Image (tube, rainbow, N blue to C red; front, top):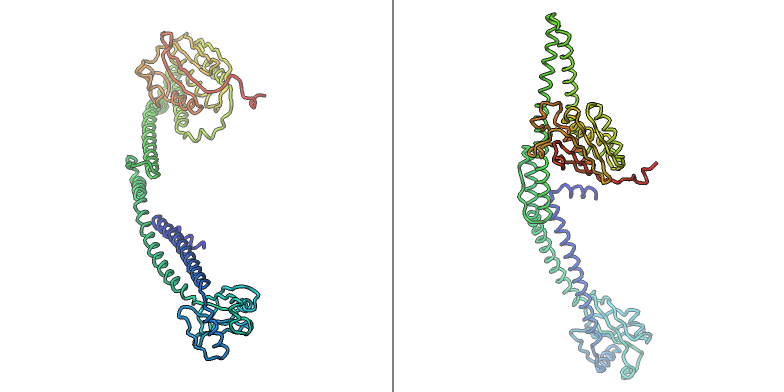
Amino acid sequence: MSGALRRFRALPLRSRLALLTATAVAIAVAAVAAACWFVTRVQLQKQLDDSLQNVEVGAGYVQTLRLSCAGGDAAVTAPQTYTIQLVMASGEPCTSPGVPPIPAQPADTAVASGEREEALHTTEASDGREMRVYTYQFTDARQNLIPGPPFAVSVARPMSEVDDPLSSLAWVLLTLSGIGVLGAGATGLWVARAGLRPVDKLTDTVEHVARTEDLTVRIPVEGEDEIARLSRSFNAMTSALASSRDRQAQLIADAGHELRTPLTSLRTNVELLARSDETGRAIPPDDRAALMASVKAQMTELAALIGDLQELARPDTADQGRPLRVVALHEIAAAALERARLRGPELTINADLSPWYVRAEPAALERALVNVLDNAVKFSPPGGTVDVALNRHGELTVRDHGPGIPDGELPHVFERFWRSPSARALPGSGLGLSIVARTIQQAGGTVTLRRPSDGTPGTEALIRLPGAPTPPPATTA
């Protein structure tokens, strides 16, 4: 059984569909044919039984037959359609001369002896023919026509009257069933080919994409059936893959461009130090200190850039594996503020933080807030002010009083490696706000940069995160 199942699974899909269709039709046709055969058999046998029970054997014929069986000279003309015989109480049959007798059965003897009124059964005649026999009691008035022992009358017809039409019907049904199964198999194969033609196209397209890595190929979508849905899903998948590959290529190109500048500067400084050691010409102490400070700054910038690239290169599914738990946004914002004050000690940072609890990954959320505050510190003028507020609706605003961002540049601030012309001279990789947008979106929130509502210079960052002003009961100590 398992071997047959393995061979069946090894067949092509269209062959399996055609075979299943033919099998289903064969079962249905066989069931209908069998039901038709049995219903016809029951009806024919019922008609035969009715005809036997409706036969009226005349008293004269019975008297003549009885005299003939008793050894008399009476001539008996046997009916051509029926076999009529007398059954004595002793079980001895009596029939017309030249007619093969039908051995009496116990039921016939019981009718002849008066134990039952009638009997209907199938038995075999002395010549081997299968007969349908109906035996009934002859009335007392008629039995008294001729004195003698009691008897019953049996009327019989050959079962071939039922079996022959049934045999013909069986051959007809078998022939029609075979034709029907073959036609169903052919039709099933045609339907499978027609129905699977879109699947063949999809398969060819998938094989083409796998062979050529051409993600621009699209499958025409027709209708609203399952094949159309599969085609739309495939088109969406290839479109997403093409977009992902383009972003990956763009990321690599942008990363190479961003890495080239600090690496070039770092290489120049290292070469100056190496040439000084090789030639024995010492660099003045002040210049050497400035050179070493530049090397350390460039190494710090490279480390920050590589860390940002690693953060952005991690797939979103990796973030889904991180444990999300209820955290206090106001506490994380306070920790980020302490780090921001260390980076801008000359600035005044005002904070008004109301309690707000969100579900997020704490380290990633703190890094996002640090990036937002770093931007505010970076673009604030010396001695300036940065205002940070977290209201009771979960809205965190970070407002600086720097030059602000032109309206034409606001749509690009969250793009990777994008830096405004005024910020290109400042340290940074251009990835900080991209990391912020990604982290906030994964926490279910939104982040925007806009001009302050009071019309004064500066930039205001608005972060909205779903949460509540009080922690859930399960998180309370």
